[in-house]
Amino acid sequence: MNKQQLFENIKRKQSFLCVGLDTDIKKIPRHLLTEEDPVFAFNKAIIDATAPYCIAYKPNLAFYESMGVKGWTAFEKTIKYLNENYPDQFIIADAKRGDIGNTSAMYARTFFEEMQLDALTVAPYMGEDSVTPFLGYEGKWVILLALTSNKGSHDFQLTEDAQGERLFEKVLRKSQEWGNDENMMYVVGATQGRMFEDIRKIVPDHFLLVPGIGAQGGSLEEVCRYGMNSMCGLIVNSSRAIIYADSSENFADVAGEKAHEVQLQMAEQLKTL
Image 1 (tube, rainbow, N blue to C red):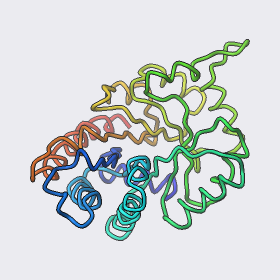
Image 2 (cartoon, helix red, strand yellow):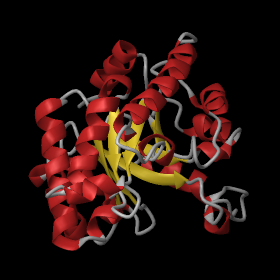
Image 3 (cartoon, rainbow, N blue to C red):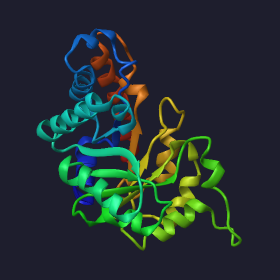
């Protein structure tokens, strides 16, 4: 999916919501545990309920890998279900890969050739040769970690060099030598507030993947005020606040209602474009 197609979906659905499929078998409704594949059954119900209100899904690989082969199978079935039934959805593997070149090339083959995903989160700190193998796939996206929403982000990402340049700013500037706004996005946590202004000074045209609204306390209004550009430029993720909003047999309906609430808020923000 290219940048223009992504923007067209945003306009058509009046949404830039990404639903995070952080599916923990210990948190899903208990009645699903009798299913042959409880994780996939949960994901399928969540997808069917929320698809009208979002433009992307982001399965977090850690939640699937923690279950070994069973978890990977559930992940594969989830991706296949999305590709076959909701081909307009932008699918992000939140895997945070990043290794030396030949290893990154294998990761790229896994997620872009074998799994047919649209995007992959990548850690940039091993440098150019760890990132460029992911950039050789037309219509696929690298989403580099830039400024994250966790407390520990301050340990390294905000440190300054002798010229006063912060590490996340160096990542933004240097990485533009490797890719562009047609194949590279950046992760910026919703809790970073006005820091979006600093980010937009460096990458005005790139899409940003923004986790941290909902359970992590980020403000959608603030993210839009400082981070939105003329093509929206935002994919805002919500995981726990949507998928775990209810644990009864009505869990999917409630998840759909929560996604719809966020979509309506996003529609208001899109009026400014």
